[in-house]
Image: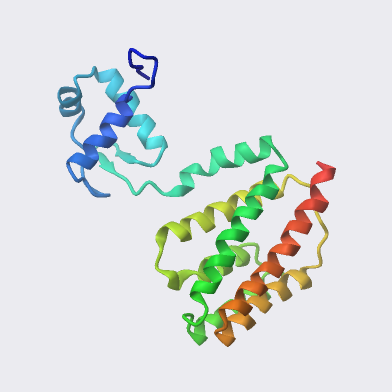
Length: 224
């Protein structure tokens, strides 16, 4: 890290490589300039360039393919999973904050997609709700499929990220012992509201679902 004369943070070598990617309009999948080229372009030594590129790889910004080269990556939000999970597990009650953020996001989105989900997908959502008894991934797939029609990749990645953190952190808490039938019923109620095409009813059903999720977290937290 470099600092300006006034003590402020200056651009790191990683920052400069990211800016170079934007300046050269390198899309995901494009080849990054070679190591010698980066050294010339940035006026940096080989070890510094290698360290910066590895740091960007850890962030999902570049992908190193040995024997082939270094490429611009998609930078999926899942690279934030370890740090976000650590943050919340270090502050256990922050799990309730995560659930609140999920609720704000999903209650808003469910109203947006109401009336846009085809009948065959609603049938698939009902099937996924039934499978929650035996399939641990059914809930994740259910929430992802709910918003597939919103055509917003960032939203889908955020929902998946928050779901993963909730599951990882929640597994460290004492079980809340909610009947699985109630969990299934909550998900089916969301689908039922969506079948009406009524955005208000869909939002209300999703709020009821998250009321139970928040209660589950509240019951589990004191035992941690």
